Image 1: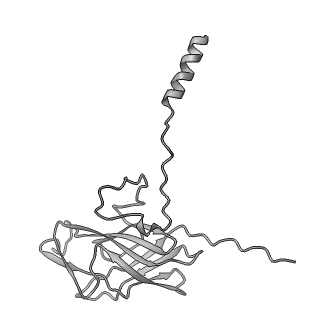
Image 2: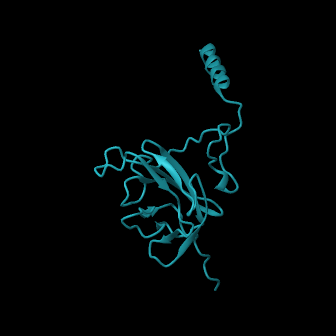
Image 3: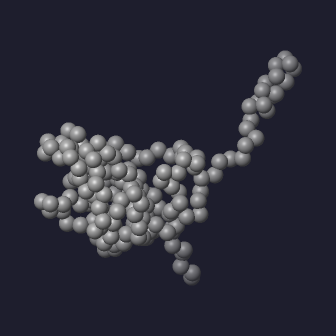
Length: 186
């Protein structure tokens, strides 16, 4: 019996890892994802829904794949890809995309807006990027950080018309609870 107990304790000690615990907590998450950087370790975090996307858009070619809050920014991860099953035939040929620098996030109640600060992976208007029919473009938008307590918001880029489809997405949500207020002193 002592031999089994000794063997099991040796096995437990030898299986224990001596590596330090992995930390994945940047000071400011603006550097959390670096596009096209192969040297960084892969994050084990899964995107909420990279196929169906987050929120609701009238344009089936755009998806919000993730939303992150950092100390300084509200970071919105998006993709643009033409739908090969589109009935309007827009899959064939090329499209031009860009992002309006005047885009805003609006709180769910519409009382507060948050300006776009920068974008990675997509040019800002008036510059454009041509996209081939089978190309998928991932890009990241950095907005002013949502105020604490604002958990529901919309992305408004511009007014869509017959010529242009804008990256407007309604019904976005992120966990961003308000801090409890200290009790009043008596």
